[in-house]
Length: 91
Image 1 (cartoon, one colour):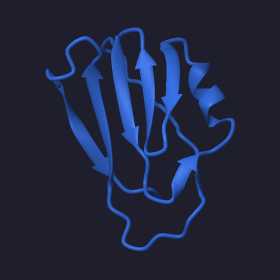
Image 2 (image 1 turned 90 degrees about the horizontal axis):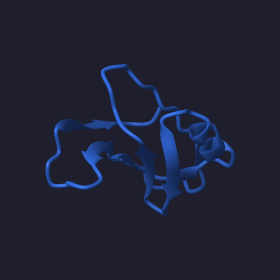
Image 3 (image 1 turned 90 degrees about the vertical axis):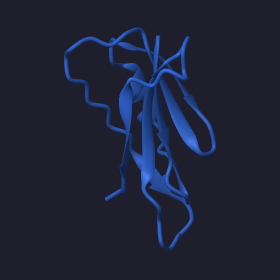
Image 4 (image 1 turned 180 degrees about the vertical axis):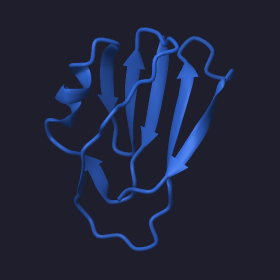
């Protein structure tokens, strides 16, 4: 099993309904939403490109937002991160 961990920008939450859209994808086993991150559990990865769209809702106005971090790792061996982490800012 593979986990895609998406940290949420400060002041943002996952928009209602966005979780259901994620879980419609065949490879998504389940999602877990916490206050600061969304965890997307995948059955497995292959060489096909995958796109996940998370709709966020801003609930608190923040200044100087820091980039969000996205990590992809093996559920059973989280210390062996084989795919680099990505950072980016919301638009």
